[in-house]
Image (tube, rainbow, N blue to C red; front, top):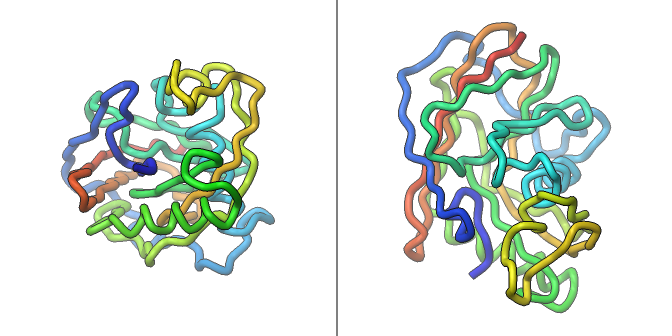
Length: 222
């Protein structure tokens, strides 16, 4: 089965199930449209940037406490992968916010022999999504049906998910390796938030026995 975010990461066996009361203002903020190019990148390129951080970066969120990171002038928010309670994130003022409640990915050679096959595989896996929602300060963000990233080269850094996961299996990768990946997700790029504290809730439900997942983060914009 191809991987999905958010899901149980098999290696670390974690799941999010967090609740919080509604937060403060800035409720009118909505993601940019699919054809936008925030900070000079297409939405597909932002999805690639996001997955590079989650799966390939040494400061990725799977095996660290990081709730987010800054990349290219935007703040990438972790998918729901922990059970550590309400997460607190410091977001630089003026940063766009990149979030996803659900995203799938596929890679060569495990799930396809070429770019077209792994793109199709990621699309099919995402079709298992039954329900998803993302709310910012109590108002739902427009997510749409999701979109694919296209195939891209994922750089494996030391200490990243791909460096530490799947040890001793055919999918084992080491730092310095390059993995050909494709993803499909409901990625949202939100304009910069006003200074203050903002509540972000991500949730998704998947068919095929994958279950229901949610997480709440408090974004502190300073």
